[in-house]
Structure formats: structure tokens, C-alpha cells
Length: 341
Image 1 (cartoon, helix red, strand yellow):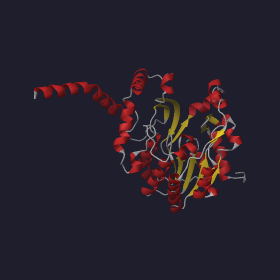
Image 2: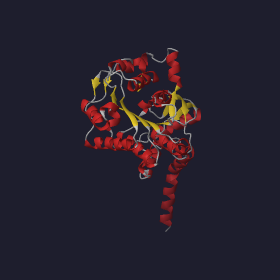
Image 3: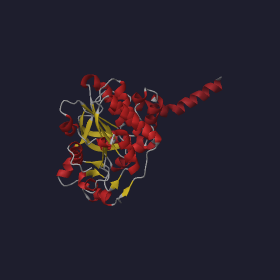
Image 4: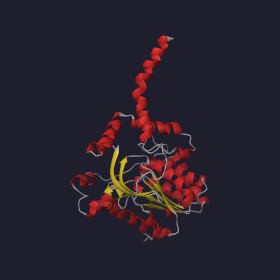
């Protein structure tokens, strides 16, 4: 018995560092998934530790919906965040109660689950804007990784254990722990932190009602002529123009049809925008045909092969993310068409 006790004591002592890490994780909640009190972001300031934007979108919607009764939604990945509610309301009306239901690295599966969730809580979908591209359309499953995994709320709570395990695993990795401790102790953003996608350098303005994030520092740097420096220009000029291959099959089409059936039941007015990427044709012609077959060609707008948009780097922050200057052009051409698409 003594031998067993001594063995258990040794195991306990060996595990103390791990338990300490878990306690620190639970107290600090660096990814904002333990203490789910909205707002998750400050109204203005640095983002700090990169968190799961899809989780924040879902939990903010859950908390806010009883008060704001959202009826108009913008769906998409981080490429969708610069399609602003204020610009969109110019076309759908000021009375619309809008919500930006985005996720970093959004997937077709995640987008479908968000539409199903809105429907399941009895919310009305009057208007919807879907910002898609081949990266999003290709992924018909729950993408792994703590920054991308789907919020358990969207799956009826079924993936709670796996969801939280991915965050704990990320926190206890040597790269994260060292970076997190350095950032907390010194309060300083260092270049190596940004390269690892652990700490964000974005300085934002956040609207908790619409769940919109705006990087106000980037636009100020552009206005001051400091943004498009030689390092950033290399990100654009070194890209070779090439098309994407077909990414959708039968399973993808079923998911699109599920989204379309909910929209039809709500008699929703909606638009599907294929988002442009700098110097790329980002959707295959067969995938585009599938989108038009499911949603109707009158509701699908392909800007991925638009040479005007895809060749002007000043419309982008980086090759994948349009500035509001560019998204306004798209919204105008979608809602005030000149029969050029």
C-alpha cells in the first residue's frame, strides 16, 4: 500500500506544472471561450491574443438577439468584414436590423450551420449577403484548429469537449506559452509574435451591436502614405495570376441547397458575392454554375474574374482582403447593376 501511495504522490508532483498551466488558462481565458460575457472586444484598442471569431460571432448573436431582433445578416470569412452594415443599409433600408455573422477561415459547413442556427432560434431572415470564395466553398467539414473550429452552440453542444480541448492544447504549446507570457509581462508587441499568428497587431474599432470590426490604423496609414511600403507591395507584385480548380462536389451542393431552402422559407432577399482576390481567378466555372443553379443566377455575382478589381492593389489591404473602398464598389454594382456581370 505504501508503494502505491508513494507512486501516486510522485505522479501528483510530476503533474503539478500541468495543473498550474490549466489554472492559469482558466483564470486568464486568453481565447475568451471560458467566460462568455459580451462584449468580447473593447470598443477600441488592440485585439491582443488571436481568438476564434466564429465563436465570438455566435455567442454575441445569442446574447444580443433578444434585444435587437436581427433580421439581416452578412456571412463570410475575414474577407467579408469590410462589407460594412452602414454601406449595405443604403440598399436594403435603414430599418433593417443587421448582424455580421462571420468567422475567420469560414467554411461552407460553418456558414450552413449559422443559417440553420438563426432559423432554429426563430429569427427572421429578411436580407442576407453571402461573401464566398473557393477557400470557403471547398471546406465541407468542421475545420480543426482553435481559431477555426465551429462554436458548439451551432451543433447543439455536441462538440464541447473537443472544442475546449483544442484551445487548451494551443495554450499549453511551448510557442504559445512563451509568447503569451512575454506579451503579458512586457506588454509589448514583438515581430516574432505576429509571425506566429498568436498575438494580433490590429488596432480596431468594434461595434458590439452589429459585431463589426474595423481596423482603423490601416486606413490612417494609407491616408498618410505609409501603408503600401516595399514590403507590402512585394505581397502583391510577386503573385502570378492563375485560376482555382473545381472544389465542390455532391456534398457541397447538398449544403448549398440546405441554405437555399431556409432562405426560400423565409422569403429572404439575398445576394451571393464571389469575392475577388488580387491577381487571381478564384472560382472554377463549374463551381460558379453550381452556385447559380442552387441560388438562381440573378442572385449570384462573380467578381473573382473582374480584372478591374483584381488588378488594383490599392483596393486591398493584402491580396485576400478588400478595403471598404473596394467593397463599396461591389455593393453598388450588385444593387445598382449596369448589366455588366
